Amino acid sequence: MVVSAAIDKYFYAFVHPNEGEGVHISSSDYRCFNRWLSHEKPIWDGDLRLPRAVLHEFGVNQGFSVFLASEIPPGTGLGSSSSVAVALIKAFSTLVGQRLGPKQVADMAYRIESEKLGRPCGKQDQYAAAFGGLNCIYFDDAGVEVAPLELDSDVRQRLRERLLLFFLGSARSAGNIGNDQRRATREKNAEVIEALHYLKEAAQEVKQSLEQADLPRVGRILRDTWEQKKRLAGGVTNARIDSVYERAIAQGAIGGKVTGAGGGGFLLIYCEPDRRAAVCAEMERLGLYRMDFQFDMGGAKVLVNSVSHGQYADLPTGLRASAYV
Image 1 (cartoon, rainbow, N blue to C red):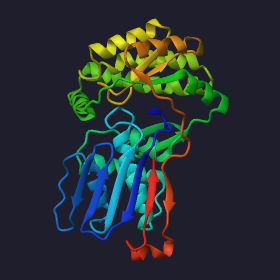
Image 2: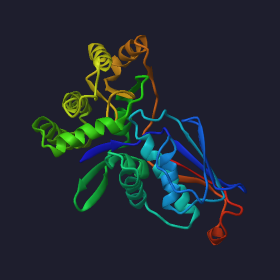
Image 3: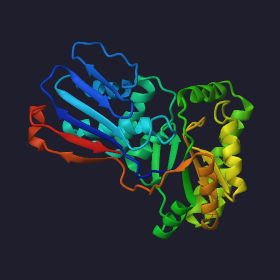
Image 4: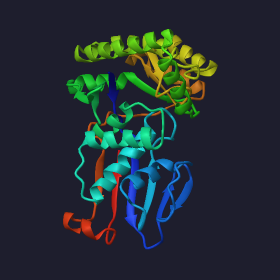
């Protein structure tokens, strides 16, 4: 079980026809371009391996240009890679006339990342991107259940005001950290297993705290779970992250954690409004900058689709679409 919140930092996928050969894929974030020719055997490597894998899933190998852009840097612990998959699946499923719900989109995104690309990823990022909102997400052998947190708008706003995101200025490889954690879990490492059980129980406590509007307790749980998260793998933290975190606590923050797998990216801090200015000033003195955000309640959406349903059979003629997550 996890408690997940989607924020208003979006990934955009623009798809439109071209008369050139193959599929052209370009990304402003990775500053790269790739042309995938229809007769080429798919190779899942390089920065654009994920979009190529999604196109392969839909059998798209001719007559399109795809442009990708994100409001946040890749590899910073905010679920950007899963958002790439979800946005592309949303766009191409719409273009080929498939009506996929959020769960179907998330399931496909996870399958492509984990099976086709062999990434050591969990499922929460795909579901957060596809569904949006604040949710409890449950995982078991039968599948995944997404249960929205029914919070008053006042509680959501107060929570948002107490959560701060600071960019640490360094990306990290979630794959390496995830591999280490999975290996330790398979080997039944007692310390890692104990930490994982603690984190699951903490998610239930966060749910209760939010439903009871006990927001300071959320901050304390973040503080305690960060200590447990550092037990999962060696690369979760480092001396600089520890120093920055300790300085935030010294200025009155109650708790926090590094987002995603850890090792860099964004630092999430919880502090009460009367300590916000002091914490922000201290982080800026350390060279960290705060990223403003709101909660996003809508999930993946198609923004523009210029093709009517009856035209799907004529793809790619007269086609342009874009989606965002």
